[in-house]
Amino acid sequence: MRVLLVEDEPDLGAAIKRTLTQEAYIVDWVQDGLEAWGYLESQWAQYTLAIFDWLLPGLSGVELCQRLRTQNSPLPILMLTAKDRPEDTAEGLDAGADDYLVKPFRKIELLARLRALQRRSPYFQPQQLQVGRLTLDYGTHNVSIADVDGQVPQSVLLTHKEFQLLEYFMQHPTQIVTRDQILNQLWGADAYAVSNVVAALMRQLRRKLSEQGCENAIETIYGVGYRLSL
Image 1 (cartoon, one colour):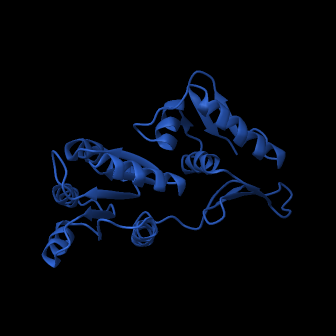
Image 2 (spheres, helix red, strand yellow):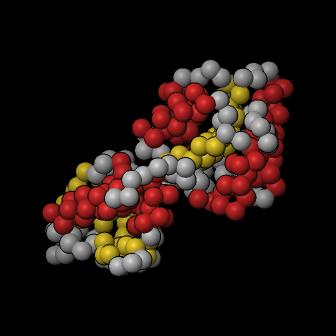
C-alpha cells in the first residue's frame, strides 16, 4: 500500500512516515503542495491513500483536494490540521477530503483512520491475491504455495519487504520489472537504497520460495530486470 504524505513540519512528517513504514506502508513524503501536485497530476492512481496537511507552501491541502476531485480522482484523502472549528471541518470535507484529523493526534488514531479509509476505498485490497500456484495473504503476511499434485499448500512467512516485493510481482504477472521500478515501489521516490539491496532481497525471496518447491518463480532477464514466471 502506497501513501502520499504531504506535511511541511519536518518532525511531524518524519514521525508519521516512520509510523506508516513500520506498518508496511510505502510512503512518499513531500513538504510542498506544488511538489505534491507534481506527484499526483499524472500518477495519482499509484497511491492507495493520501494524507494532506491543511497549511502548505505552494498549494494548500484544500487546493490539492479540489484539484484531485476536479480530475474525478477517487483517491481517499485524510486531512491533517490544527484548525478545529466546525466551519473548518466542513470546508475541508466540502473540498473533497474523506476524513479530518485535528493535531495533535495519537498514532493509534491515525492508523485507525487510515484503515477505515482503506475499507471505503475503490482500491481496497481483497484478503488474498492469487497468481498461479501462489496465494498472498494480506492478513498474515504469508504466501501459500500450492503443490503441483494438488496437495495441501505450503505456507511461508515473509518479512514486510519480501511481502511487498512478491506482491509487486504478482500485481504485474509476466511483466518485466526493472531494478529502478522495484526501488521506487518498495522504498519510495525519495528514498536512498544501496546498489545491491534489490539483489539481496531477491535472493531472500527466491530462497524461501525454492525451499517450498517453487523454484525459478522469479527469473532474471539479464540487462533488463526480473519477471514472475509461474
